[in-house]
Image (cartoon, rainbow, N blue to C red; front, side):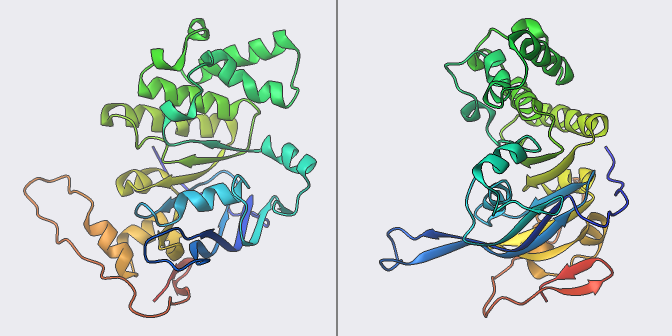
Length: 301
């Protein structure tokens, strides 16, 4: 697996500006009518052909950011552009067309596949919804997709429960690729899988990226995996990006204390070495805006 960054284009494939998503607060310490800001002024770009990593702890806003970009969740404010087109102001009809270009692979393959549908029908469903081809053409496309993700088309009449976790994630990937998208949000796509299977699925995703000219927004908390496959990475903390840049720069010269704390928690390959575990106490004052600490490397310090 390599992470050689493609040459930057004049217009990024995806451009996010000042994205905000608030949810109503419920119970606990929150007063009536209070709102929680899950995504707080996030800006980033994803170049065509790259794998862009979005990392942080659970609750940092990674998944909400990915879903806002696809407009699966409606942002409170901000701007999302796909090939220069404003996604958030797109009409229902135009958004339907854009859905063919932008897809998602969900974290848990067991809960994301309808247990009452045969897996062939699950993969075919996007083609049916978008009116792609007749029945014979759709079946041929589904068979092709099963082969592409390393599954025998003979299993198309089985149900999700008859497959392993890794096989179910391959089916979810086939469904995401059915409409030939160019941009895929991979939301923790291997975190629910056994360690022995994770590398197989990641290698498949990298092979498909090369074969199909895919661009990934790869949401993850596994920093070792992100280091291997992502060209650039953004680190999120409490809904904000606190550091962003080339993956090599982030891992070799992390600047924000939260990023350094995350990296210090990554297990070392050498069992005889002990890592110095850093603790991030959290921000004591208002968030600090990003500033460029090196070329293409920004941090909230």
